Length: 457
Image 1 (spheres, one colour):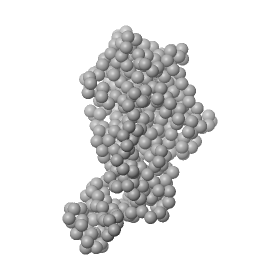
Image 2 (cartoon, rainbow, N blue to C red):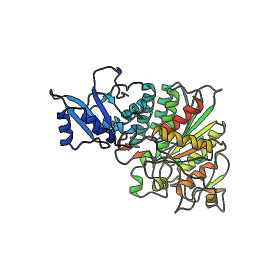
Image 3 (cartoon, rainbow, N blue to C red):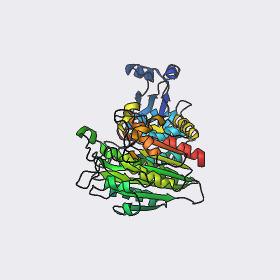
């Protein structure tokens, strides 16, 4: 995986000047009449996201002037990597609040292209390391984000349970981690009945993957990811429009694996356990049914009210397993509910936690890293909506309202540690924005990594 960074910070490169709109007047007055006329002809005044490519007399690019508006953060730099022609560039000037490492990360995120099936139109532009940037940190975050995007973008014919298993094995092998798997009917023997029920109708067997890394004496961190490689909705089948993008329903597993890669690459002094519940929710004669009652790993029985609320079922067994080791911190990631998108849209994933300290840390990390997340409530008054007259619970609440909250409340029933957060992510960018091409997207990684570094670094 070749990252879009030059090895030599002093190599010849085209300068980029990043300006706030309010800085434009004084800046342009210090430059030539030719440049002032060119800017006027293009109505360029350093508006947010606008770019002015200034030619040299030999036809090459003499400099690039880029507008950052007056409110944009360093993520806007990603637009340069998305739209500049191939070549070598360096940041000659940027707003003082644009941290060098953050600019490098944004450039790397913007340079991403999913080219497994269709070649990219042009090579990515290369950036010289910004002065004082931590390029090792930038590289590990960019690589992990690209990994999550690649996994989510890959269609299910090439990213079913076996392929996702292989991807996890590759990450484990690259960092000296161990990976174990419980597959197919062995899930029943080893007491993962909900994972087995959801995935048993698919051509490729369901499984739980356990990646283990680090010193057993270090603080234990557990990551759990929903890995539904395709979701038909089961017998409560989705309509075509709802099924179209369900290759991305393994986005939670992709995120857990990507965050694990950052942790291992940085050699964070923790004992890391990653549990990926990997299934395809298919339809066949042996598919689980509405009305079935299934005992969970933790013990409580679950009445299946809707087979399209399957992600919380597989996470329930995985979370119960993660809690058996009493981790100091437990984070889970899942493309769990459309209700989260209705509430907050595609760009702002909700998170849930009952730990006030963790909530404050995540909120601050979100602001510090420009990685949007928003806390939603674990609203106790809704608990009764999941009652079943013939089982300990059903897997849905009030179907018309608060779907994301019900999903989180259901998961909470299987968590026995206090330091836990659940992220209901979208893992998808419907349209291009700076540092974020359209398609599979890595959300929450930078914020979660910031919290992990602060807690355990």
